Structure formats: C-alpha cells, structure tokens
Length: 258
Image (tube, rainbow, N blue to C red; front, top):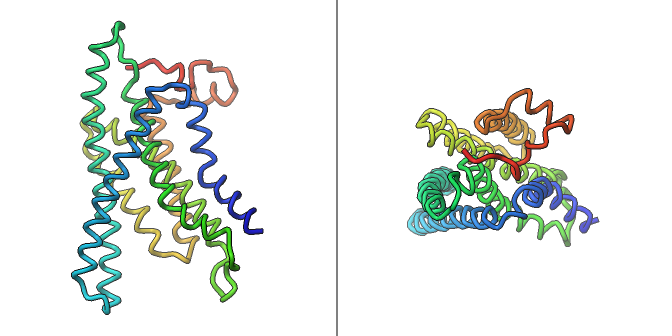
C-alpha cells in the first residue's frame, strides 16, 4: 500500500509538469538550459531565505511558541519575496542573454521569444519548488507507519501532492504573467503576482484543514491560468482550435518569437 501511495502521489504532483517538459521543452537544448537556469535561481533564493531564517531562529527565544510561529510566518513571507526578486533578476538576465543571442544569430528574429522564456523559466521555478516541497513527504509515504492512526487526517499525502501540483503550475503561470508585466511595464500585474504568491503560501498555515487551503489555491490557479493564457496571446478561437486538434501552430514548438 505504501508503494502505491508513493507512486500515486508522485504522478499527481509531477505528472502534468513532466508531460509539459517532454512535449514542449525536452527537444530544444536552449529551452532545457534556460529551464535549468531558472531552477538554479529559485534554489539560490531558497538558500538565502533559509540562511536568514536560521539566523533569526538562533537569536530568538526558542521556548516561546508565539515567537517561533511568528518567525515561521516571517520565513514564508521572506522566501516568497526573495523568489519574486530572483524571478525579476532572472528576467533581466534573460533580456541581456536574448539580445546577445540575437546579435549572434544569422536570422532577424530571436532564437527564443520572451513568452517562451517566461514559460520555460516558470516551469523551472516550479520543478525545483515542487521537489523541495514534497520530496521528504514522498519519502515518508514509503513507510513504516500508517497515516491517521492516531486520529489525524488520512489525506495528508494526497493533499500534499495536489498542493505541490498547484504550486508547480502556479509558478509557470506566475512566470508568464510576471514577464509580460515587466515587458509592458504593468506594475499592477507584477504586484498581483507577488500578492497571489503570498496568499497561496500563507494558505498552508490552515493545514491540516486541507479544504481550507486546497480550494482557494485551485481558485487562484484557475484565475492565473486564464490570465497567463491571455498574456501569451491566447484567445477563445485558439482554444477551440486546440481542443478540436485543428490548430497545427498552437504548440510552443511552432510558436513564432516576437
């Protein structure tokens, strides 16, 4: 049973993201490089936030439960802000890199568009975030032990898997909206990305009341999915053509850089 839980939760958490990687990124070495670079930027942001949180915990009163909970909230907020700061830094770096690639290219267009870079970097952020969020949980799911034997929720593993899936996809959507906001200098949209990221992260504090965190998170996910689709140039007509398999140029592989 534990093995079934492990593989089931793994496929729930990473199945859609891995599918997106295989079908839209894996065949292009340049996209793979940018995805790995995005994952690295997220990792550095986590390292910095962990370092700050560790120092503050060491100098705080460890016997005060209220203070420790406050530090936990502080750590989450700091981590989100650093992640978005590094996303902005990565955007600036990609702008410079794209200009360099354009100067080296023999064509008049960029080898990869900013929309594609937003998608790829967002998925890189999501992969690394999801891995750090759920890897220890998946390890525990292999046993020994039985979830809920002492009256706790039996939905711990599957709820964590669905939350990880949402976080991965949200990072992808946040990346698209964030880069579009930077390109068009729409600072309100950029602020909305930061606020929704903070909201989703803080929703985890209501656990183990998982319905209180999962339902609002998936509402935010749905809104950000529609927003990101619009930022990427999508329309109802394109969606209809895609769903009916009549749009041969819908996939990123055939997307024309702007």
